[in-house]
Image (cartoon, rainbow, N blue to C red; front, top):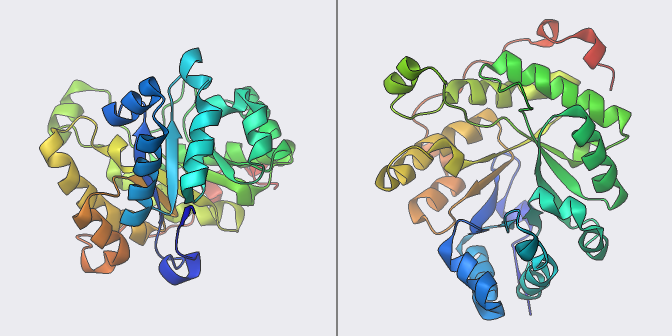
Length: 291
């Protein structure tokens, strides 16, 4: 029998983000070895262990090679036979409608950029199979660093969703952690991303459409330039701030016990408050507000 995640009302009230386990990523050597050896036992164990550790969904990224893409259906079937939790699958699955059909309404596509033509295509495919979609607030030629830049891009995503008839309730927006590109700022930040603008974006997004807009971040993206021994400490510091800002879902290491304790009681670990919410409607182009 598959392991089931606890019912959302009992463990995941609206104030707490959904935990998405990060282990099944092509950069994880254990996962890569399971793919190479076609070892369903390792895959099932990885899925079960994450759920038992508290993950309520699982991220799945097999990379971009054609060889691994052919394994996607087997990997998804193996995981779904082991655990009964939602799957967040990398955007390569857009090219595999048979998987979206087999798991209609049970998959979230993670993730696509906000480039308009590609986004419309992704929304049309996701909508056809009742899949949810994670959209990165970035597009070719535009890497936003301020909250206002992220919010403007979010407004464009929402406008595109209306044009594509894609339900806003099926969207996640990922504001992404970025490092400033100039060397001086990078040195002063010591490899730390601009956290304040991400927190402000998450706090302000509900004002954008007059309704709740779900947000998602991957904690590991905030610490990718830090030494391995410092990453957990940063994640533990960031998670309470993200939760206070209103984050809905987070991809993280569910085996990090200290981090998982913070997931359940973030108020006891908050080291600072998120930026105050300001009114942002006058900052956004009126043409983007008709949804």
